[in-house]
Length: 385
Image (cartoon, rainbow, N blue to C red; front, side, top):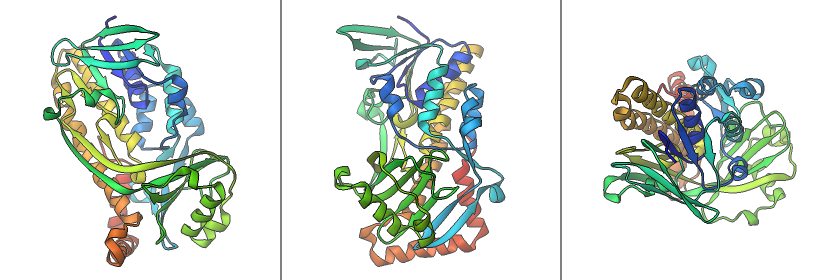
């Protein structure tokens, strides 16, 4: 087999890149080690920046997004019960859209025109400095795909970044001493907009996937186990971390999914190695506090798709030569914002009473400063690519 671009990973980054290349007439094959059902079953983020919405429009897959996406003109922050609304539209003239990553993936899957190979075992990358190829096994048979370029969109634990020699890669990482215990429930959300809450017992987030499905999180230690948390225990803890009015309005029910996500910040540099490019979670991880993970992945593949289109249509390598620098400039700004949101809203036992007073002072400053609120809003709705 041969193609122009081999894409490893059929998550939203790989599927979006494949879709943009399809529309430009660039042949591509997507190789995914999991099944399609497994990929669709992953519960992930659901806040889209306007840039991601625009990319869905460009990819001609925004029909359901337009019909079902929930426009959020702001968000609520809470500190020990004191609430502050950040008015995105009033502050910066933009908004975000709540539309689950699962739905983004489904829309891109259904629009897929090229070849997607699921359940590919032992995926390996070959000769990305020369004549690149990807091999995999399926049903006891080894397959090989020769290509011009390889796009590694296969996540933090994927084969793409792992195939790069260690001496060629610089990584930056911070692992946080806590995670998010999240549940999904078929109940209306407690508020129209997201609520980020800081409490001395830990962080909490009230989020949503639709008008009838809600997603809630509480901060837990990294060594916590899901099986230790009954639904009742989760709801009791969530109420304690919310202000009384919100806690009273909360509609509870049996969880339909429950999991713990660790929090980390991670960036790999550079993002190009010969004819191999890294994008999405293969290149970077952000804490979910700032709602940047999916949006960064969409930004990466938009830049990479434009570079590939320029290469094949105009025979210019300027785009692919600048891909790493352009993508990393946006990635580090999003890393900074996600770190800042995480630092403000979570409890850090090692910082003690002084640390909490600093967080309180930061919240109070934010509450009284139009300029500070504008900075938060500008970053949350998405910086220019």
